[in-house]
Image (cartoon, rainbow, N blue to C red):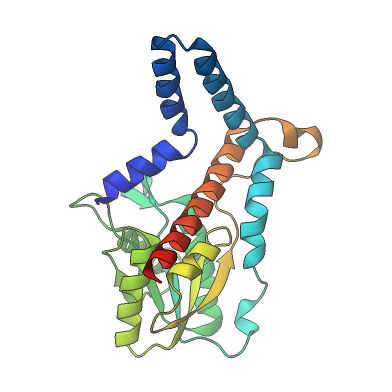
Length: 259
């Protein structure tokens, strides 16, 4: 299945895209004269969005993901050190003329900043992983390499440009590092993404160690009563959390089928 179909299904299953499916089913019920069922569906859809856009809800959904592999201060002081640093791609900003047309996403920039810090403290070589969903465009990894080398003045040793999913990140990255004789590597991604990432990178030729960084994107107002007021940034954070939980469930199902 192509990456476009995968993303389309993902967008329709998760909020706010799933409101479209709810509305279509409600319309079908309405045409079938089942107006009560149609109204209930629409009300449930609206309640879902309001709840997920509430900072208190998004914080609750993210808490378990973030607490599994929390961000650590001065990770480079841990021993023994790994052999390399792996940075996962995180999308792109396609409208950035001030940077030549395209650049990395805000989430990707947080990963790059942390990878640059880890490299400065350890001099470990860096691998960046991330492809491009559109033919003829620079891969996420190439965009991120340009930022690391030109802006953070941090060298990149390997670039993996074929992957479109976290599982592919793991597969192709592991091949490159194993061929280079690498035995262990820090895995740099956000704390909410780390549980699923480590499952994707588990049981590979290289051992991957969590190097979590903080959440990318704006933080919703969560002070006093504002944590109960729906906000767009909270909906984004809730959607990230739900995406991770669905991904973890999918991984569990695939493991069950393979056993």
